[in-house]
Length: 120
Image 1: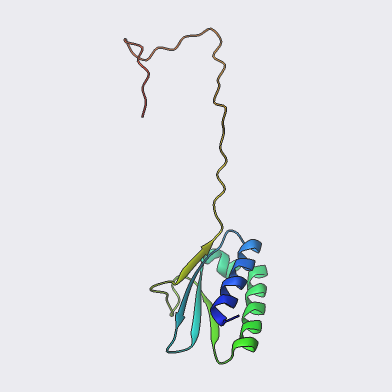
Image 2: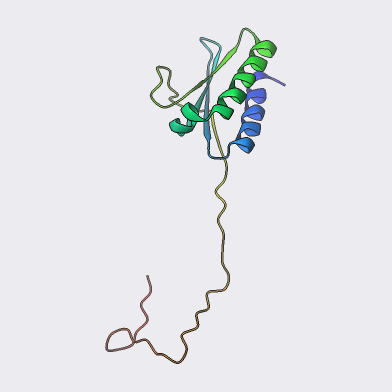
């Protein structure tokens, strides 16, 4: 497994633990630095469980892929991601409803003088 695949796999595992996060990844070949922007910033700064898992991830990566490095950043950091190679986020679950029935009793509702149904 190469370093990029390792990072992608590791970020997917982190995403399962922290589905509220979004990860933006970019590699800087000049510095051998893998950059991961974590969004939202408030979670990056204040989520202590994530910070511990992030530290473990960085430690393991550094031991496996030295001299390459990985850094986690947030919006407003001195390092920035201009063109992410990939973005990982948890898909939004959309709940759908199939039954839209309403019990109106025997009341009739009129829409204006002509009783037309309006649709948008």
